[in-house]
Length: 358
Length: 265
Image (spheres, rainbow over the protein chains, first blue to last red):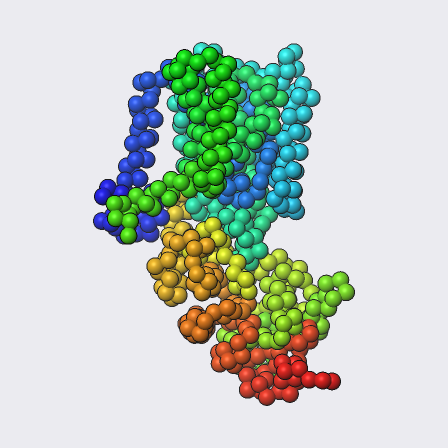
Protein backbone atom coordinates (compact mmCIF):
# COMPACT_ATOMS: atom_id res chain seq x y z
CA UNK A 1 0.00 0.00 0.00
CA UNK A 2 2.76 2.39 0.97
CA UNK A 3 5.39 1.11 -1.44
CA UNK A 4 3.94 1.92 -4.85
CA UNK A 5 4.86 3.58 -8.08
CA UNK A 6 1.24 4.27 -8.88
CA UNK A 7 0.23 7.87 -8.41
CA UNK A 8 3.87 8.92 -8.53
CA UNK A 9 3.97 10.12 -12.14
CA UNK A 10 7.23 10.97 -13.78
CA UNK A 11 6.73 13.85 -16.15
CA UNK A 12 10.32 14.60 -17.10
CA UNK A 13 13.34 12.49 -17.93
CA UNK A 14 15.00 14.13 -14.97
CA UNK A 15 12.38 12.68 -12.63
CA UNK A 16 12.53 9.35 -14.39
CA UNK A 17 16.26 9.13 -13.92
CA UNK A 18 16.34 9.92 -10.22
CA UNK A 19 18.13 7.64 -7.81
CA UNK A 20 15.07 6.56 -5.85
CA UNK A 21 12.11 6.26 -8.19
CA UNK A 22 9.69 5.30 -5.43
CA UNK A 23 8.44 7.97 -3.05
CA UNK A 24 8.84 5.79 0.01
CA UNK A 25 12.50 5.19 -0.83
CA UNK A 26 13.13 8.90 -1.18
CA UNK A 27 11.62 9.58 2.21
CA UNK A 28 13.57 6.77 3.80
CA UNK A 29 16.78 8.12 2.34
CA UNK A 30 16.20 11.59 3.75
CA UNK A 31 15.17 10.17 7.12
CA UNK A 32 18.37 8.12 7.35
CA UNK A 33 20.45 11.18 6.45
CA UNK A 34 18.56 13.26 9.02
CA UNK A 35 19.15 10.67 11.72
CA UNK A 36 22.84 10.46 10.85
CA UNK A 37 23.31 14.23 10.86
CA UNK A 38 20.82 15.46 13.44
CA UNK A 39 20.06 12.64 15.86
CA UNK A 40 23.26 10.61 16.20
CA UNK A 41 25.40 13.62 17.22
CA UNK A 42 23.38 13.90 20.44
CA UNK A 43 24.19 10.33 21.39
CA UNK A 44 27.78 10.44 20.26
CA UNK A 45 30.22 9.10 22.78
CA UNK A 46 33.67 7.67 22.49
CA UNK A 47 32.53 4.07 22.12
CA UNK A 48 29.78 4.68 19.59
CA UNK A 49 32.05 6.86 17.45
CA UNK A 50 35.26 4.87 17.58
CA UNK A 51 33.98 1.31 17.68
CA UNK A 52 30.90 1.61 15.49
CA UNK A 53 30.28 4.62 13.28
CA UNK A 54 33.74 5.78 12.21
CA UNK A 55 35.07 2.35 11.21
CA UNK A 56 31.80 1.69 9.39
CA UNK A 57 32.04 4.95 7.42
CA UNK A 58 35.74 4.55 6.65
CA UNK A 59 35.40 0.96 5.43
CA UNK A 60 32.29 1.91 3.47
CA UNK A 61 34.36 4.45 1.53
CA UNK A 62 37.00 1.80 0.84
CA UNK A 63 34.29 -0.63 -0.28
CA UNK A 64 32.79 2.04 -2.55
CA UNK A 65 36.20 2.49 -4.13
CA UNK A 66 36.79 -1.18 -4.78
CA UNK A 67 33.22 -1.60 -5.98
CA UNK A 68 33.79 1.01 -8.68
CA UNK A 69 36.77 -0.93 -9.95
CA UNK A 70 35.61 -4.51 -9.44
CA UNK A 71 31.83 -4.22 -9.34
CA UNK A 72 31.32 -1.62 -12.06
CA UNK A 73 34.35 -2.01 -14.29
CA UNK A 74 34.98 -5.73 -13.74
CA UNK A 75 38.68 -5.39 -12.91
CA UNK A 76 39.53 -7.62 -9.98
CA UNK A 77 41.95 -5.98 -7.56
CA UNK A 78 43.73 -7.35 -4.51
CA UNK A 79 45.77 -4.22 -3.95
CA UNK A 80 43.26 -2.30 -1.83
CA UNK A 81 45.41 -2.47 1.32
CA UNK A 82 48.41 -1.14 -0.57
CA UNK A 83 46.41 1.74 -2.05
CA UNK A 84 44.99 2.58 1.37
CA UNK A 85 48.58 2.72 2.60
CA UNK A 86 49.39 5.16 -0.20
CA UNK A 87 46.53 7.37 0.99
CA UNK A 88 47.68 7.16 4.59
CA UNK A 89 51.33 7.91 3.86
CA UNK A 90 50.39 10.72 1.48
CA UNK A 91 48.30 12.19 4.29
CA UNK A 92 51.17 11.89 6.71
CA UNK A 93 53.63 13.53 4.35
CA UNK A 94 51.23 16.35 3.50
CA UNK A 95 50.28 16.93 7.14
CA UNK A 96 53.90 17.17 8.25
CA UNK A 97 55.08 19.17 5.24
CA UNK A 98 52.21 21.72 5.30
CA UNK A 99 51.11 22.14 8.95
CA UNK A 100 48.67 24.93 8.10
CA UNK A 101 46.58 22.95 5.64
CA UNK A 102 43.01 22.04 6.64
CA UNK A 103 41.99 18.40 6.79
CA UNK A 104 39.59 18.45 3.83
CA UNK A 105 42.36 19.59 1.50
CA UNK A 106 44.77 17.06 3.00
CA UNK A 107 42.36 14.20 2.40
CA UNK A 108 41.45 15.25 -1.11
CA UNK A 109 45.11 15.70 -2.05
CA UNK A 110 45.92 12.26 -0.62
CA UNK A 111 43.10 10.88 -2.75
CA UNK A 112 44.64 12.39 -5.86
CA UNK A 113 48.07 11.00 -5.02
CA UNK A 114 46.54 7.54 -4.63
CA UNK A 115 44.65 7.97 -7.90
CA UNK A 116 47.96 8.58 -9.64
CA UNK A 117 49.52 5.48 -8.11
CA UNK A 118 46.39 3.49 -8.95
CA UNK A 119 46.58 4.47 -12.61
CA UNK A 120 50.21 3.37 -12.68
CA UNK A 121 49.35 -0.08 -11.31
CA UNK A 122 46.25 -0.19 -13.51
CA UNK A 123 48.29 -0.12 -16.69
CA UNK A 124 48.67 -3.95 -16.83
CA UNK A 125 44.86 -4.23 -16.93
CA UNK A 126 45.00 -3.28 -20.60
CA UNK A 127 46.77 -6.54 -21.38
CA UNK A 128 45.64 -8.96 -18.72
CA UNK A 129 42.25 -9.84 -17.32
CA UNK A 130 40.56 -11.69 -14.50
CA UNK A 131 42.70 -13.78 -12.17
CA UNK A 132 45.90 -12.68 -13.85
CA UNK A 133 45.09 -9.05 -13.16
CA UNK A 134 44.31 -9.98 -9.56
CA UNK A 135 47.83 -11.39 -9.28
CA UNK A 136 49.28 -8.22 -10.81
CA UNK A 137 47.47 -6.07 -8.26
CA UNK A 138 48.63 -8.44 -5.54
CA UNK A 139 52.14 -7.54 -6.62
CA UNK A 140 51.19 -3.88 -6.13
CA UNK A 141 50.02 -4.70 -2.60
CA UNK A 142 53.31 -6.31 -1.59
CA UNK A 143 55.46 -3.80 -3.40
CA UNK A 144 53.78 -0.80 -1.77
CA UNK A 145 53.99 -2.27 1.73
CA UNK A 146 57.65 -3.10 1.17
CA UNK A 147 58.29 0.43 -0.14
CA UNK A 148 56.75 2.12 2.91
CA UNK A 149 58.76 -0.09 5.22
CA UNK A 150 62.00 0.26 3.33
CA UNK A 151 62.26 3.97 2.57
CA UNK A 152 62.56 6.07 5.75
CA UNK A 153 61.55 9.24 3.89
CA UNK A 154 57.93 8.07 3.94
CA UNK A 155 57.81 7.93 7.76
CA UNK A 156 60.09 10.93 8.27
CA UNK A 157 62.89 8.74 9.67
CA UNK A 158 61.00 8.05 12.87
CA UNK A 159 62.71 5.47 15.04
CA UNK A 160 59.70 3.19 15.39
CA UNK A 161 58.85 3.19 11.68
CA UNK A 162 55.34 4.25 12.64
CA UNK A 163 53.49 7.27 11.38
CA UNK A 164 51.57 9.44 13.85
CA UNK A 165 48.90 11.94 12.91
CA UNK A 166 49.62 15.40 14.31
CA UNK A 167 46.78 17.61 15.49
CA UNK A 168 44.95 19.33 12.62
CA UNK A 169 41.65 21.16 12.41
CA UNK A 170 39.02 22.62 10.13
CA UNK A 171 37.75 26.08 11.02
CA UNK A 172 39.23 25.66 14.49
CA UNK A 173 37.55 22.32 15.17
CA UNK A 174 40.14 19.68 15.95
CA UNK A 175 39.74 16.61 13.76
CA UNK A 176 42.91 14.59 14.31
CA UNK A 177 45.20 13.95 17.23
CA UNK A 178 44.40 13.10 20.86
CA UNK A 179 42.25 16.18 21.48
CA UNK A 180 39.69 15.50 18.76
CA UNK A 181 36.19 14.91 20.10
CA UNK A 182 34.19 11.88 18.96
CA UNK A 183 31.50 14.20 17.63
CA UNK A 184 33.89 16.15 15.42
CA UNK A 185 35.57 13.06 13.99
CA UNK A 186 32.22 11.36 13.41
CA UNK A 187 30.73 14.35 11.57
CA UNK A 188 33.90 14.76 9.52
CA UNK A 189 33.82 11.12 8.38
CA UNK A 190 30.09 11.31 7.74
CA UNK A 191 30.41 14.37 5.53
CA UNK A 192 33.23 12.79 3.53
CA UNK A 193 31.36 9.48 3.20
CA UNK A 194 28.08 11.09 2.09
CA UNK A 195 29.86 13.36 -0.38
CA UNK A 196 31.82 10.46 -1.88
CA UNK A 197 28.74 8.23 -2.10
CA UNK A 198 26.99 11.03 -3.96
CA UNK A 199 29.94 11.39 -6.35
CA UNK A 200 30.04 7.62 -6.86
CA UNK A 201 26.35 7.55 -7.71
CA UNK A 202 26.75 10.43 -10.16
CA UNK A 203 29.72 8.86 -11.88
CA UNK A 204 28.11 5.44 -12.19
CA UNK A 205 24.76 6.66 -13.54
CA UNK A 206 26.21 8.66 -16.44
CA UNK A 207 28.40 8.27 -19.46
CA UNK A 208 31.52 7.25 -17.58
CA UNK A 209 29.75 4.65 -15.45
CA UNK A 210 28.11 3.14 -18.51
CA UNK A 211 31.48 2.89 -20.23
CA UNK A 212 32.80 1.00 -17.18
CA UNK A 213 29.86 -1.38 -17.15
CA UNK A 214 30.15 -1.85 -20.91
CA UNK A 215 33.79 -2.88 -20.51
CA UNK A 216 32.78 -5.24 -17.69
CA UNK A 217 29.92 -6.87 -19.57
CA UNK A 218 31.28 -7.12 -23.12
CA UNK A 219 34.51 -5.36 -23.91
CA UNK A 220 34.39 -6.00 -27.66
CA UNK A 221 30.94 -4.47 -28.04
CA UNK A 222 32.02 -1.57 -25.84
CA UNK A 223 34.87 -0.81 -28.19
CA UNK A 224 32.59 -0.97 -31.23
CA UNK A 225 30.28 1.59 -29.65
CA UNK A 226 33.15 4.01 -29.15
CA UNK A 227 34.47 3.25 -25.66
CA UNK A 228 38.23 3.52 -25.49
CA UNK A 229 39.20 0.58 -23.24
CA UNK A 230 42.36 2.38 -22.14
CA UNK A 231 40.43 5.42 -20.93
CA UNK A 232 37.61 3.41 -19.35
CA UNK A 233 39.87 1.08 -17.39
CA UNK A 234 42.34 3.71 -16.28
CA UNK A 235 39.59 6.11 -15.24
CA UNK A 236 38.06 3.31 -13.18
CA UNK A 237 41.45 2.68 -11.56
CA UNK A 238 41.88 6.40 -10.91
CA UNK A 239 38.44 6.99 -9.37
CA UNK A 240 38.57 3.76 -7.41
CA UNK A 241 42.03 4.54 -6.05
CA UNK A 242 40.89 8.04 -5.12
CA UNK A 243 38.15 6.57 -2.93
CA UNK A 244 40.42 3.91 -1.47
CA UNK A 245 43.10 6.53 -0.81
CA UNK A 246 40.65 8.75 1.04
CA UNK A 247 39.58 5.74 3.09
CA UNK A 248 43.21 4.96 3.96
CA UNK A 249 43.80 8.59 4.80
CA UNK A 250 40.80 8.70 7.17
CA UNK A 251 41.69 5.35 8.70
CA UNK A 252 45.14 6.59 9.60
CA UNK A 253 44.54 10.21 10.51
CA UNK A 254 41.06 10.32 12.01
CA UNK A 255 40.35 6.80 13.22
CA UNK A 256 43.63 5.25 14.35
CA UNK A 257 45.83 8.30 14.76
CA UNK A 258 48.90 6.14 14.19
CA UNK A 259 49.73 3.37 11.77
CA UNK A 260 52.37 0.79 11.05
CA UNK A 261 52.16 -0.23 7.43
CA UNK A 262 52.43 -4.03 7.70
CA UNK A 263 49.85 -4.32 10.47
CA UNK A 264 47.36 -1.75 9.30
CA UNK A 265 47.39 -2.15 5.53
CA UNK A 266 48.36 -5.78 5.01
CA UNK A 267 46.91 -8.26 2.56
CA UNK A 268 44.08 -9.11 4.98
CA UNK A 269 42.77 -5.58 4.47
CA UNK A 270 42.57 -6.17 0.73
CA UNK A 271 40.63 -9.36 1.31
CA UNK A 272 38.34 -7.79 3.87
CA UNK A 273 37.30 -5.01 1.47
CA UNK A 274 36.84 -7.57 -1.29
CA UNK A 275 34.57 -9.62 1.01
CA UNK A 276 32.61 -6.48 1.81
CA UNK A 277 31.70 -5.84 -1.79
CA UNK A 278 31.02 -9.50 -2.56
CA UNK A 279 28.72 -9.84 0.44
CA UNK A 280 27.21 -6.39 -0.04
CA UNK A 281 26.73 -6.69 -3.77
CA UNK A 282 28.99 -6.03 -6.75
CA UNK A 283 28.06 -2.99 -8.77
CA UNK A 284 25.92 -1.36 -6.10
CA UNK A 285 26.52 1.77 -4.03
CA UNK A 286 24.06 0.57 -1.41
CA UNK A 287 25.83 -2.80 -1.39
CA UNK A 288 29.13 -1.17 -0.48
CA UNK A 289 27.55 0.31 2.63
CA UNK A 290 25.73 -2.87 3.62
CA UNK A 291 28.84 -4.95 3.05
CA UNK A 292 30.92 -2.63 5.20
CA UNK A 293 28.21 -2.67 7.85
CA UNK A 294 28.16 -6.46 7.81
CA UNK A 295 31.92 -6.87 8.15
CA UNK A 296 32.43 -4.07 10.67
CA UNK A 297 29.27 -4.04 12.75
CA UNK A 298 28.49 -7.75 12.96
CA UNK A 299 31.56 -8.54 15.14
CA UNK A 300 30.74 -5.58 17.39
CA UNK A 301 27.15 -6.69 17.69
CA UNK A 302 28.12 -10.29 18.43
CA UNK A 303 30.61 -9.18 21.04
CA UNK A 304 27.95 -7.09 22.74
CA UNK A 305 25.48 -9.94 22.75
CA UNK A 306 27.90 -12.65 23.87
CA UNK A 307 29.97 -10.74 26.40
CA UNK A 308 27.59 -8.01 27.45
CA UNK A 309 24.31 -9.89 27.18
CA UNK A 310 25.16 -13.48 28.02
CA UNK A 311 28.18 -12.79 30.18
CA UNK A 312 30.52 -15.21 28.45
CA UNK A 313 34.28 -14.92 28.87
CA UNK A 314 35.89 -12.57 26.35
CA UNK A 315 38.27 -15.10 24.81
CA UNK A 316 35.50 -17.62 24.12
CA UNK A 317 33.32 -14.89 22.65
CA UNK A 318 36.15 -13.69 20.42
CA UNK A 319 36.64 -17.14 18.92
CA UNK A 320 32.95 -17.81 18.55
CA UNK A 321 32.61 -14.45 16.84
CA UNK A 322 34.95 -15.61 14.05
CA UNK A 323 32.96 -18.82 13.65
CA UNK A 324 29.61 -17.07 13.50
CA UNK A 325 30.72 -14.33 11.12
CA UNK A 326 32.39 -16.91 8.84
CA UNK A 327 29.29 -19.06 8.92
CA UNK A 328 27.04 -16.11 8.14
CA UNK A 329 29.18 -15.18 5.15
CA UNK A 330 28.80 -18.69 3.75
CA UNK A 331 25.06 -18.77 4.41
CA UNK A 332 24.52 -15.39 2.78
CA UNK A 333 26.54 -16.36 -0.28
CA UNK A 334 24.57 -19.59 -0.69
CA UNK A 335 21.20 -17.92 -0.24
CA UNK A 336 22.03 -14.95 -2.45
CA UNK A 337 25.28 -15.12 -4.43
CA UNK A 338 24.74 -11.59 -5.72
CA UNK A 339 24.96 -10.09 -2.28
CA UNK A 340 22.79 -8.28 0.17
CA UNK A 341 22.01 -5.54 -2.34
CA UNK A 342 20.37 -8.12 -4.60
CA UNK A 343 18.40 -9.40 -1.62
CA UNK A 344 17.16 -5.87 -1.03
CA UNK A 345 16.25 -5.59 -4.70
CA UNK A 346 14.22 -8.81 -4.60
CA UNK A 347 12.53 -7.63 -1.44
CA UNK A 348 11.61 -4.36 -3.14
CA UNK A 349 10.13 -6.21 -6.11
CA UNK A 350 8.01 -8.26 -3.75
CA UNK A 351 7.03 -5.27 -1.66
CA UNK A 352 5.87 -3.47 -4.78
CA UNK A 353 3.25 -6.17 -5.37
CA UNK A 354 2.43 -6.88 -1.75
CA UNK A 355 -0.11 -8.02 -0.60
CA UNK A 356 -1.35 -9.31 -3.98
CA UNK A 357 1.59 -10.95 -5.67
CA UNK A 358 -0.26 -11.88 -8.86
CA UNK B 1 33.61 -2.44 -60.83
CA UNK B 2 33.06 -0.09 -63.73
CA UNK B 3 30.25 1.69 -61.90
CA UNK B 4 32.47 3.22 -59.27
CA UNK B 5 33.56 6.83 -59.61
CA UNK B 6 32.79 7.00 -63.31
CA UNK B 7 30.71 10.15 -63.06
CA UNK B 8 27.75 8.76 -64.92
CA UNK B 9 26.39 7.18 -61.79
CA UNK B 10 24.92 9.71 -59.37
CA UNK B 11 25.39 7.41 -56.39
CA UNK B 12 28.15 8.38 -54.02
CA UNK B 13 30.55 5.72 -52.83
CA UNK B 14 30.58 5.66 -49.03
CA UNK B 15 32.89 2.78 -48.34
CA UNK B 16 35.38 1.51 -50.84
CA UNK B 17 37.43 -1.60 -50.21
CA UNK B 18 40.31 -2.13 -52.61
CA UNK B 19 42.16 -5.41 -52.97
CA UNK B 20 41.80 -6.44 -49.35
CA UNK B 21 43.81 -9.48 -48.24
CA UNK B 22 43.74 -10.78 -44.70
CA UNK B 23 45.52 -13.79 -43.30
CA UNK B 24 46.07 -15.27 -39.89
CA UNK B 25 49.47 -16.90 -39.96
CA UNK B 26 49.24 -19.27 -42.88
CA UNK B 27 45.46 -19.20 -43.14
CA UNK B 28 44.14 -16.85 -45.77
CA UNK B 29 40.77 -15.56 -44.63
CA UNK B 30 40.28 -12.99 -47.37
CA UNK B 31 42.08 -12.91 -50.67
CA UNK B 32 42.15 -9.81 -52.84
CA UNK B 33 38.56 -8.69 -52.40
CA UNK B 34 37.33 -5.36 -53.72
CA UNK B 35 33.83 -3.99 -53.44
CA UNK B 36 32.14 -0.77 -52.51
CA UNK B 37 29.05 0.42 -50.70
CA UNK B 38 27.00 3.34 -52.00
CA UNK B 39 25.54 5.90 -49.71
CA UNK B 40 21.99 4.99 -48.75
CA UNK B 41 21.87 1.45 -50.08
CA UNK B 42 21.31 -1.90 -48.44
CA UNK B 43 24.28 -4.06 -49.32
CA UNK B 44 24.22 -7.75 -48.53
CA UNK B 45 27.28 -9.94 -48.09
CA UNK B 46 26.49 -13.61 -48.58
CA UNK B 47 28.38 -16.83 -48.91
CA UNK B 48 28.68 -20.31 -47.42
CA UNK B 49 30.07 -20.83 -43.93
CA UNK B 50 33.69 -19.85 -43.58
CA UNK B 51 33.61 -17.71 -46.68
CA UNK B 52 35.08 -14.72 -44.84
CA UNK B 53 31.93 -12.65 -44.36
CA UNK B 54 32.37 -11.92 -40.69
CA UNK B 55 36.07 -11.32 -41.23
CA UNK B 56 35.04 -8.75 -43.82
CA UNK B 57 32.88 -6.91 -41.26
CA UNK B 58 35.69 -7.11 -38.74
CA UNK B 59 37.97 -5.49 -41.30
CA UNK B 60 35.42 -2.74 -41.93
CA UNK B 61 35.08 -1.82 -38.28
CA UNK B 62 38.71 -2.15 -37.45
CA UNK B 63 39.07 -5.34 -35.43
CA UNK B 64 41.27 -6.84 -38.09
CA UNK B 65 43.83 -4.91 -40.01
CA UNK B 66 44.28 -6.39 -43.47
CA UNK B 67 47.83 -7.07 -44.61
CA UNK B 68 47.12 -5.69 -48.05
CA UNK B 69 44.63 -3.34 -49.61
CA UNK B 70 43.09 0.03 -48.98
CA UNK B 71 39.95 1.08 -47.16
CA UNK B 72 38.36 4.38 -48.11
CA UNK B 73 35.53 5.73 -46.00
CA UNK B 74 33.76 8.90 -47.15
CA UNK B 75 36.65 9.82 -49.40
CA UNK B 76 39.35 9.34 -46.80
CA UNK B 77 41.80 6.50 -46.64
CA UNK B 78 41.88 4.75 -43.29
CA UNK B 79 45.19 4.01 -41.69
CA UNK B 80 45.64 1.89 -38.57
CA UNK B 81 42.54 3.02 -36.71
CA UNK B 82 41.26 1.43 -33.54
CA UNK B 83 37.65 0.19 -33.42
CA UNK B 84 36.58 2.97 -31.04
CA UNK B 85 37.99 5.60 -33.38
CA UNK B 86 36.02 4.07 -36.20
CA UNK B 87 32.89 4.31 -34.05
CA UNK B 88 33.47 8.07 -33.93
CA UNK B 89 33.57 8.11 -37.74
CA UNK B 90 30.02 6.81 -37.79
CA UNK B 91 30.19 3.05 -38.23
CA UNK B 92 28.10 0.91 -35.88
CA UNK B 93 27.40 -2.79 -35.88
CA UNK B 94 25.55 -5.69 -34.34
CA UNK B 95 26.99 -9.12 -33.69
CA UNK B 96 26.18 -12.62 -34.80
CA UNK B 97 26.07 -13.79 -31.20
CA UNK B 98 24.30 -11.14 -29.20
CA UNK B 99 26.83 -8.85 -27.57
CA UNK B 100 24.63 -6.78 -25.27
CA UNK B 101 25.72 -5.49 -21.88
CA UNK B 102 23.99 -8.13 -19.80
CA UNK B 103 24.17 -6.37 -16.47
CA UNK B 104 22.46 -3.22 -17.71
CA UNK B 105 18.86 -2.31 -18.49
CA UNK B 106 17.60 -1.85 -22.05
CA UNK B 107 17.65 1.90 -21.55
CA UNK B 108 21.26 1.87 -20.31
CA UNK B 109 22.29 -0.30 -23.24
CA UNK B 110 20.80 2.19 -25.66
CA UNK B 111 22.30 5.12 -23.74
CA UNK B 112 25.69 3.45 -24.06
CA UNK B 113 25.06 3.58 -27.79
CA UNK B 114 25.04 7.39 -27.44
CA UNK B 115 28.59 7.29 -26.07
CA UNK B 116 30.17 9.02 -29.05
CA UNK B 117 27.64 11.84 -28.83
CA UNK B 118 28.42 12.70 -25.22
CA UNK B 119 31.54 14.46 -24.04
CA UNK B 120 31.09 16.03 -20.58
CA UNK B 121 34.20 15.41 -18.53
CA UNK B 122 34.67 13.59 -15.25
CA UNK B 123 34.28 16.72 -13.14
CA UNK B 124 30.87 17.63 -14.60
CA UNK B 125 29.73 14.05 -14.26
CA UNK B 126 30.77 13.91 -10.62
CA UNK B 127 28.65 17.03 -10.01
CA UNK B 128 25.81 15.68 -12.16
CA UNK B 129 23.50 18.71 -11.77
CA UNK B 130 24.08 21.09 -14.64
CA UNK B 131 25.84 20.19 -17.90
CA UNK B 132 26.09 16.45 -17.32
CA UNK B 133 22.41 16.10 -16.53
CA UNK B 134 21.39 18.27 -19.47
CA UNK B 135 23.51 16.19 -21.80
CA UNK B 136 21.99 13.02 -20.36
CA UNK B 137 18.45 14.30 -20.89
CA UNK B 138 19.12 15.48 -24.43
CA UNK B 139 20.48 12.05 -25.33
CA UNK B 140 17.69 10.32 -23.46
CA UNK B 141 15.24 12.10 -25.74
CA UNK B 142 16.99 10.71 -28.78
CA UNK B 143 17.06 7.24 -27.29
CA UNK B 144 13.32 7.47 -26.63
CA UNK B 145 12.82 7.98 -30.38
CA UNK B 146 14.70 4.75 -30.99
CA UNK B 147 12.62 3.01 -28.33
CA UNK B 148 9.44 4.19 -30.02
CA UNK B 149 10.75 3.20 -33.41
CA UNK B 150 11.59 -0.34 -32.32
CA UNK B 151 8.42 -0.66 -30.23
CA UNK B 152 10.22 -1.67 -27.05
CA UNK B 153 8.66 0.88 -24.69
CA UNK B 154 7.43 -1.72 -22.26
CA UNK B 155 10.85 -3.27 -21.63
CA UNK B 156 12.72 0.02 -21.20
CA UNK B 157 13.86 -0.68 -17.64
CA UNK B 158 14.22 -4.47 -17.90
CA UNK B 159 17.71 -5.94 -17.55
CA UNK B 160 18.57 -7.28 -21.02
CA UNK B 161 19.59 -10.66 -19.63
CA UNK B 162 15.93 -11.39 -18.87
CA UNK B 163 14.66 -10.72 -22.39
CA UNK B 164 13.90 -13.41 -24.97
CA UNK B 165 16.29 -13.85 -27.88
CA UNK B 166 14.25 -11.99 -30.49
CA UNK B 167 13.92 -8.91 -28.31
CA UNK B 168 17.60 -8.99 -27.44
CA UNK B 169 18.40 -8.86 -31.14
CA UNK B 170 16.09 -5.88 -31.44
CA UNK B 171 17.73 -4.10 -28.51
CA UNK B 172 21.11 -4.71 -30.06
CA UNK B 173 19.89 -3.11 -33.28
CA UNK B 174 18.62 -0.25 -31.12
CA UNK B 175 22.00 0.22 -29.50
CA UNK B 176 23.65 0.46 -32.91
CA UNK B 177 20.97 2.89 -34.11
CA UNK B 178 21.35 5.06 -31.01
CA UNK B 179 24.82 5.91 -32.26
CA UNK B 180 23.21 7.52 -35.35
CA UNK B 181 25.63 5.71 -37.62
CA UNK B 182 26.29 6.63 -41.23
CA UNK B 183 27.04 3.00 -41.96
CA UNK B 184 25.38 0.19 -40.08
CA UNK B 185 26.84 -3.31 -40.18
CA UNK B 186 24.50 -6.16 -39.30
CA UNK B 187 25.99 -9.59 -38.75
CA UNK B 188 23.18 -12.11 -39.26
CA UNK B 189 20.39 -9.98 -37.78
CA UNK B 190 17.86 -12.74 -38.37
CA UNK B 191 19.73 -15.82 -37.24
CA UNK B 192 17.67 -18.08 -35.03
CA UNK B 193 14.43 -16.15 -35.43
CA UNK B 194 10.99 -17.41 -36.35
CA UNK B 195 9.16 -16.11 -39.40
CA UNK B 196 7.29 -13.44 -37.52
CA UNK B 197 10.39 -12.07 -35.82
CA UNK B 198 12.20 -12.13 -39.17
CA UNK B 199 9.41 -10.10 -40.75
CA UNK B 200 9.62 -7.58 -37.92
CA UNK B 201 13.36 -7.33 -38.30
CA UNK B 202 13.10 -6.86 -42.08
CA UNK B 203 10.62 -4.09 -41.53
CA UNK B 204 12.94 -2.39 -39.06
CA UNK B 205 15.92 -2.67 -41.38
CA UNK B 206 14.02 -1.21 -44.31
CA UNK B 207 12.53 1.52 -42.11
CA UNK B 208 15.94 2.46 -40.80
CA UNK B 209 17.17 2.69 -44.35
CA UNK B 210 14.15 4.78 -45.39
CA UNK B 211 13.62 7.12 -42.47
CA UNK B 212 17.16 7.71 -41.24
CA UNK B 213 18.81 7.22 -44.63
CA UNK B 214 21.34 4.92 -42.98
CA UNK B 215 23.54 2.88 -45.25
CA UNK B 216 23.37 -0.77 -44.30
CA UNK B 217 25.68 -3.69 -44.92
CA UNK B 218 24.33 -7.01 -43.76
CA UNK B 219 25.33 -10.63 -43.63
CA UNK B 220 22.45 -13.04 -43.82
CA UNK B 221 21.89 -16.68 -44.65
CA UNK B 222 18.19 -16.47 -45.40
CA UNK B 223 18.27 -16.03 -49.19
CA UNK B 224 14.63 -15.00 -49.40
CA UNK B 225 15.30 -12.11 -47.06
CA UNK B 226 18.53 -11.11 -48.76
CA UNK B 227 16.98 -11.04 -52.22
CA UNK B 228 14.00 -9.05 -50.95
CA UNK B 229 15.59 -6.29 -48.98
CA UNK B 230 19.01 -5.67 -50.45
CA UNK B 231 19.89 -3.35 -53.32
CA UNK B 232 23.12 -5.09 -54.20
CA UNK B 233 24.71 -8.34 -53.15
CA UNK B 234 28.31 -9.41 -52.96
CA UNK B 235 29.03 -13.13 -52.81
CA UNK B 236 32.11 -14.57 -51.11
CA UNK B 237 33.43 -18.11 -51.15
CA UNK B 238 36.67 -19.36 -49.60
CA UNK B 239 37.79 -15.79 -49.02
CA UNK B 240 37.34 -14.76 -52.64
CA UNK B 241 34.71 -12.68 -54.32
CA UNK B 242 32.69 -14.76 -56.75
CA UNK B 243 29.80 -12.47 -57.51
CA UNK B 244 28.68 -8.87 -57.18
CA UNK B 245 25.57 -7.14 -58.42
CA UNK B 246 21.84 -6.75 -58.04
CA UNK B 247 19.96 -9.64 -56.46
CA UNK B 248 18.61 -10.88 -59.79
CA UNK B 249 21.98 -10.98 -61.48
CA UNK B 250 23.54 -12.78 -58.56
CA UNK B 251 20.73 -15.28 -58.30
CA UNK B 252 21.27 -16.40 -61.87
CA UNK B 253 25.05 -16.39 -61.75
CA UNK B 254 26.39 -19.87 -62.42
CA UNK B 255 29.45 -19.51 -60.15
CA UNK B 256 27.25 -18.47 -57.27
CA UNK B 257 24.86 -21.36 -57.80
CA UNK B 258 27.82 -23.72 -57.93
CA UNK B 259 29.25 -22.34 -54.70
CA UNK B 260 25.99 -22.81 -52.90
CA UNK B 261 24.96 -26.14 -54.34
CA UNK B 262 28.43 -27.53 -54.77
CA UNK B 263 29.69 -28.96 -58.08
CA UNK B 264 32.34 -31.45 -58.92
CA UNK B 265 35.22 -29.70 -60.60
